[in-house]
Length: 257
Image (cartoon, rainbow, N blue to C red):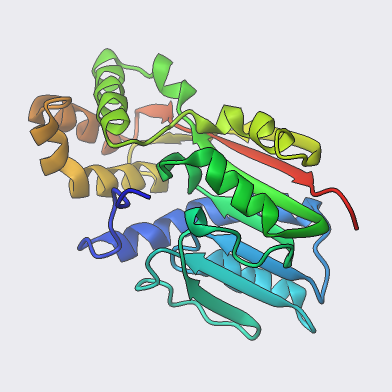
């Protein structure tokens, strides 16, 4: 697996992960609640980040359950809850525990992974017969019609740069076929996108992200200070409204059980 583009040891990564949890955890929880998670269940989150979702899962499966949280780097995993276990690991190395979990979930992981089919195979293999799997990944289709033109120009450069990094910002739409191809049943999915304005939490997320990566973006030649500055100016303008990511959530059940 290639090095994560936004390394956990970057200066602002703890703050950025906390903001990501604030923005995405409510959606993630809604999708899990639809799967009917009960006390006593065994859950696995791969790519746990700061651990906020896994801590919530631990609370949902008590008493008698357990929540395992896996990440390549656990240096920012500071959540705590009874029944929560953190493990350092790489999903490309194999299943975390073959057939060991009633729910397996991963969010915003696969678009960074070099071998996505292998990662999906290992995620599915980690689920118990009859268990559920929920994957949430981005699809950047909304940026193709972003306005004004200088913002669309920024996103074109961002996507060109990300492709060079091995990042697939359109993997979300391929999740149903990937799960069905591994034998997962009852596969279904939805996509949702936030509309936000300058100065909002989403705008601040992108401001922080671009600020962390700005030297690398400029050095790549795909973006320059002018286009980055124009984008950041829009992020600070409350009169500007936009949308960026269609988060695709796809779930299904592993045969058996």
